[in-house]
Amino acid sequence: MTHCTWILLTHIWKPHVRGSCIKQPSKPRVTLSAKSPGSMDLTLLWVLLPLVSVAWGQYGDYGYPYQQYHDYSDDGWVNLNRQGFSYQCPHGQVVVAVRSIFNKKEGSDRQWNYACMPTPQSLGEPTECWWEEINRAGMEWYQTCSNNGLVAGFQSRYFESVLDREWQFYCCRYSKRCPYSCWLTTEYPGHYGEEMDMVSYNYDYYMRGATTTFSAVERDRQWKFIMCRMTDYDCEFANV
Image 1 (spheres, rainbow, N blue to C red):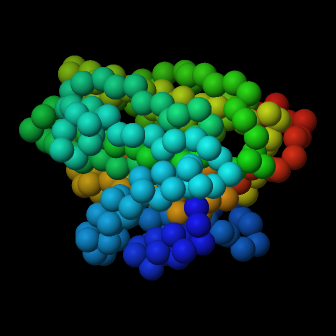
Image 2: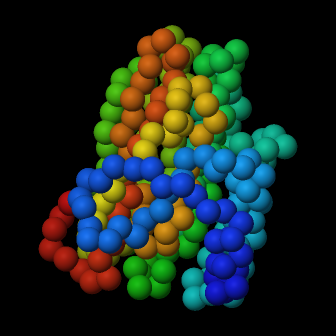
């Protein structure tokens, strides 16, 4: 990404930080946003994010193309309501943004959209990737990628009987790099049934998992994403 492009994004969208700490660093450098007060700013961000990523992949040090959305509708959602889906970032990329809308009339289900970005050269190439264990529908759950992995995709199946989805993370490990300075974001969406927009605005932090709550009344979930920095050297911890 060129310096000018990053400045452009910074001026377009200035997120409001809300979050809680898992491990308190001296000066937290992660900036995560729930919903910008101006919908136009957030819309511009989602329009520009693919363009910036393409430029980053073509002209930066990474060489990976940006993940194109599966265009099932005009909004580019990866699924239709009540349908399962499987989404994976291209090799060498990780999930950096999650967007979702809720539809009460369509089984209290959500449509989902994701964005990926290449990891820096200092992190190296993924040495292995895998699907984590299934998180069951109708239950609260907490999960991080095993083996110090980073989230590079999502897989989900809808269950009419509970009006909810089961979830799996697609995780990739980068050599023996270890996470540190982890943070738990605020709830996404802010309230059950609302639109959901989560963008990791700091390049130094990566998604490692999430914790979710489930409302038996609203039949919807709130997510908190686990964001961590990664060492630029190998470490001996098998899983952190």
